[in-house]
Image (tube, rainbow over all chains, first blue to last red; front, side, top):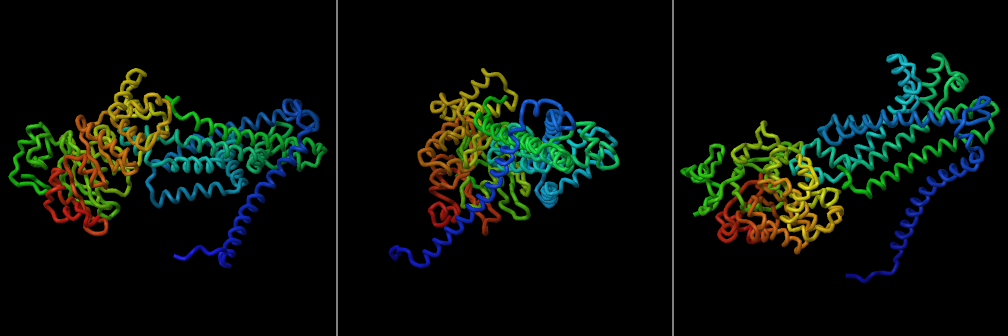
Length: 298
Length: 293
């Protein structure tokens, strides 16, 4: 055996290579994090001054130039609840089927691929599809329900994928342990697999909903057509009924009417706050569930 | 003296009738001439294949009540596949196909009319890697009885305590009942898994290399426990460890794959002391004396 050589030229080269690769990975992380921080700081610094009791909890005056955006905020919350109510049960059941019951094979691979692709479909396409389905085929006039259902369709892909991954991540031995006790597959799924996957399902669902909160394109299409049934007339929508935050923000930025910049940033901040609250509650819920174990169940 | 897997043609069926068990029309053939215990499980030409690859075939043997039967053999000889036939765990592997019959108290558990969930209530299983549920110690043991309809704190506590005592774990966890089962040591986790099986009161317990993830001290504890449990239960154990088979089992079945892990077969089955001291088959002798495997 040869003695350890001290820093041959080859070793030094490897050493440099390591440092460069390490620096690159670090740099990539910085590149990702910094803009997020800048956006957050920018929105807060520009919009914080607009936030007041009145801004959050009263109705608009003079077409939104004064007063607050309470109706918009409430409607957003309402819509997000609906999105959750539509997407989570269907998505979780679908994930249970894919992870626990479906036979592995070509068909399952195709279904999984389709679901992943669903997540990549542009949101405007969902909007058009929602309009076509709900207004033209089902003939409903409930714009809020249609918008929520459309957003839910888009959220489904994330809910399914994350729930499926959470179910598949469970150690298979635990399922077998339950089945070997003479516990049926259904009960094993409900009492072992789903509780174990619960944190992942919650995180995925809230993430999907918080993404829906920021989605503008589908609401734009749905809202516009719901209001007029012919063309885009934002005035009518805004004045006749409140819109979701993301759309309100879009409208306020593009309208060119004299709404103070501060108020627009304030709106952005409220939207950011809702998304943040959703994400933080996902995190807290996850920690809470993991720490309490399951002994309090049943 | 001793019957191996090739049964005597003229074997009488008196043994089977004496214990009131129908054995699917097959002759009763004790693996040891002095055996008086009834047969609880009879394997008749059992085979398993995965996809189109046969893993093991033509295994016929009897498992005796309150005895410990060990399946030994090199990796890939199909001993775990055979073990999993005994409580229909192979149902869970989509590509697995099981042929032949396994009679549990006279009923072929592979028939379509038999519910595998029911089979597993009679034939419990402990796995290679301890797999406690991520719940408290108490909930781990109470899980099976609860799912099968036992309710109420009193009755459940009794079942839990009894099972933990039987698994020689009670003294170590009595003050940790609310702690997570996954926080116990490896050996304790495995005994918790045994307690979990005992709580549903099976007749037979299958153990698939239950000690291979454990240290020697924990292994000896489990082995002692197995001897203890054999008073009330029938145990079938798969083990890599020949010494373990020699230490704990009453009967030993030696299995071997014909070529490269396919077509595993039962080479020799008999009383453990005879298999280890006076094997009939050259291949058994080679394996036991450590010439291969």
